[in-house]
Image (tube, rainbow, N blue to C red; front, top):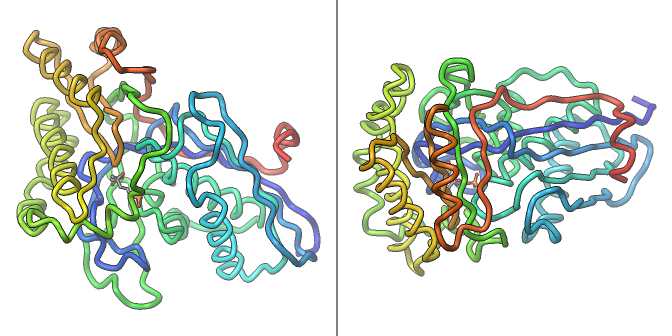
Length: 349
Ligand code: PMV
């Protein structure tokens, strides 16, 4: 390839209903347990990549503050992780040269809103687009996973996604693949995610460190024992659109992840006082007859899952909780989009 080529990818974040927490092989990003998530539509990373085939030297990486709160600085280790992923993709595609990259988020980064999922999914798709390579969903997912962010493997698909797609067998060799797969399209069930932001700055402990410490919790083995049942229950409830059965498992799962984090050595406390206040407000909503369930990733913010008819009331209630700085309304989406040679993204460089 001799011509400079450019592409932009817009990739959404995702929220896991059964969480990836702990890795069999953190280096190769092989999880301890399967996870299942919903790809969002409003919380996105937008990444433009230009391939400079004949050039040598460092990649150029630019962070653009986006439109949400708390976006003035990139997440910790941002440039090193992106640079390493660009090197990895260059090796994979054997394309030589170097890349110019600019990326921005529509939401606060590194605060437990899965900015690494959307970010690395966007980088992977933008590079693939800039190189003009045809790759199928499994390869895209596997490449995104190899960024080090396992959840990025799920963000390359829309709707409801499980990772690994084929269960957890034999993903340990040097060249093993471990892609995610879509289990249901977005059109299957219009679930909403009303996000109560209680902090917009980066969290103190990265999810990578969380995965590293997971096994030090005495509760971790117990989690692995009962997780297959929970995983099946969540998938069945999604399939049947059974909101009550779904919500019960999903909320308990999120509390369990944080129990593991809080009982790891050293312990990780992601919650803030307002996190607990939101969890309580959601329980009160349910008692008042409003079906809504909480979940959280590795951060203080709370994702409140509901159906469309409850969304307004849930958003209004969450905005009143002391300590909630912003309410973001999101919901299931169709997944990423890639554009080639986008003149509209000139401003990014
Ligand atoms: O993809 P990572 O390494 O950032 O880990 C994601 C961890 C959680 O968001 C807490 C759970 C998940 O499955 O998304």
